[in-house]
Amino acid sequence: MTQQTEQVSVSIMGRTFGIGTPTSEKATLLQAVDMLNQKIEAIQNGGRIVETDKIIIMAALNVVHDLLKISMKDGLAIGEFERRIADMVGVCEKALSEAP
Image (cartoon, rainbow, N blue to C red; front, side, top):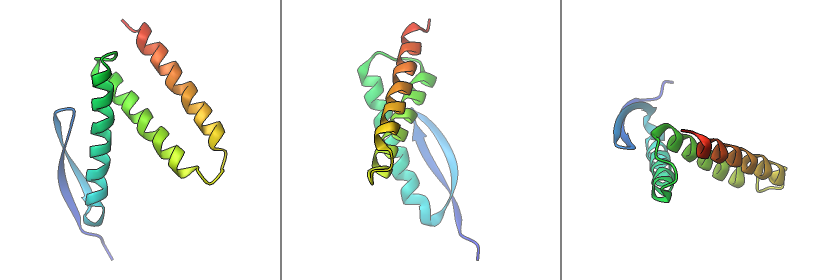
Protein backbone atom coordinates (compact mmCIF):
# COMPACT_ATOMS: atom_id res chain seq x y z
CA MET A 1 0.00 0.00 0.00
CA THR A 2 1.48 3.36 -1.03
CA GLN A 3 0.64 6.63 0.61
CA GLN A 4 -0.57 9.61 -1.35
CA THR A 5 2.06 12.34 -1.46
CA GLU A 6 1.40 15.96 -2.15
CA GLN A 7 3.53 19.02 -2.72
CA VAL A 8 2.95 21.64 -0.04
CA SER A 9 4.08 25.24 -0.40
CA VAL A 10 5.40 26.73 2.85
CA SER A 11 7.01 30.04 3.71
CA ILE A 12 9.94 30.32 6.13
CA MET A 13 11.61 33.70 6.65
CA GLY A 14 9.91 35.06 3.56
CA ARG A 15 11.18 32.26 1.31
CA THR A 16 8.77 29.81 -0.26
CA PHE A 17 9.61 26.12 -0.35
CA GLY A 18 7.81 23.22 -1.99
CA ILE A 19 7.94 20.18 0.26
CA GLY A 20 6.68 16.74 -0.63
CA THR A 21 4.79 15.12 2.22
CA PRO A 22 2.38 12.24 2.70
CA THR A 23 -1.15 13.64 2.61
CA SER A 24 -1.78 12.22 6.08
CA GLU A 25 1.11 14.30 7.48
CA LYS A 26 0.30 17.62 5.80
CA ALA A 27 -1.28 19.14 8.92
CA THR A 28 1.74 18.14 11.04
CA LEU A 29 4.13 19.68 8.49
CA LEU A 30 2.19 22.94 8.50
CA GLN A 31 2.20 22.94 12.30
CA ALA A 32 5.98 22.39 12.31
CA VAL A 33 6.49 25.28 9.87
CA ASP A 34 4.30 27.50 12.04
CA MET A 35 6.28 26.56 15.16
CA LEU A 36 9.59 27.23 13.40
CA ASN A 37 8.35 30.60 12.15
CA GLN A 38 7.29 31.54 15.70
CA LYS A 39 10.76 30.69 17.03
CA ILE A 40 12.38 32.66 14.20
CA GLU A 41 10.16 35.67 14.91
CA ALA A 42 11.01 35.55 18.63
CA ILE A 43 14.74 35.53 17.83
CA GLN A 44 14.38 38.34 15.29
CA ASN A 45 12.40 40.41 17.78
CA GLY A 46 15.22 39.94 20.29
CA GLY A 47 17.36 41.98 17.91
CA ARG A 48 20.70 40.46 18.94
CA ILE A 49 21.08 38.19 15.91
CA VAL A 50 20.58 39.52 12.40
CA GLU A 51 22.22 36.98 10.11
CA THR A 52 19.71 34.61 8.54
CA ASP A 53 21.73 31.42 8.97
CA LYS A 54 22.38 32.16 12.63
CA ILE A 55 18.71 32.90 13.25
CA ILE A 56 17.76 29.56 11.67
CA ILE A 57 20.33 27.67 13.76
CA MET A 58 19.11 29.24 17.00
CA ALA A 59 15.47 28.58 16.06
CA ALA A 60 16.28 24.94 15.29
CA LEU A 61 18.05 24.54 18.63
CA ASN A 62 15.06 26.05 20.41
CA VAL A 63 12.64 23.70 18.67
CA VAL A 64 14.77 20.65 19.46
CA HIS A 65 15.13 21.80 23.05
CA ASP A 66 11.35 22.10 23.38
CA LEU A 67 10.90 18.67 21.81
CA LEU A 68 13.37 17.03 24.15
CA LYS A 69 11.74 18.62 27.18
CA ILE A 70 8.39 17.22 26.12
CA SER A 71 9.59 13.77 25.05
CA MET A 72 11.78 13.19 28.10
CA LYS A 73 9.29 14.18 30.81
CA ASP A 74 8.88 10.59 31.92
CA GLY A 75 12.06 10.89 33.95
CA LEU A 76 14.42 9.61 31.28
CA ALA A 77 17.46 11.75 32.10
CA ILE A 78 15.68 15.00 31.32
CA GLY A 79 18.02 16.96 33.58
CA GLU A 80 21.06 15.78 31.65
CA PHE A 81 19.49 16.67 28.29
CA GLU A 82 18.49 20.09 29.58
CA ARG A 83 22.02 20.75 30.82
CA ARG A 84 23.54 19.66 27.52
CA ILE A 85 21.15 21.76 25.48
CA ALA A 86 21.68 24.77 27.76
CA ASP A 87 25.43 24.32 27.25
CA MET A 88 24.97 24.09 23.46
CA VAL A 89 22.81 27.22 23.41
CA GLY A 90 25.39 29.02 25.54
CA VAL A 91 28.22 28.05 23.20
CA CYS A 92 26.17 29.13 20.17
CA GLU A 93 25.26 32.46 21.73
CA LYS A 94 28.89 33.10 22.67
CA ALA A 95 30.07 32.23 19.18
CA LEU A 96 27.37 34.43 17.63
CA SER A 97 28.28 37.36 19.86
CA GLU A 98 31.94 37.06 18.81
CA ALA A 99 31.18 36.70 15.10
CA PRO A 100 32.06 39.65 12.89
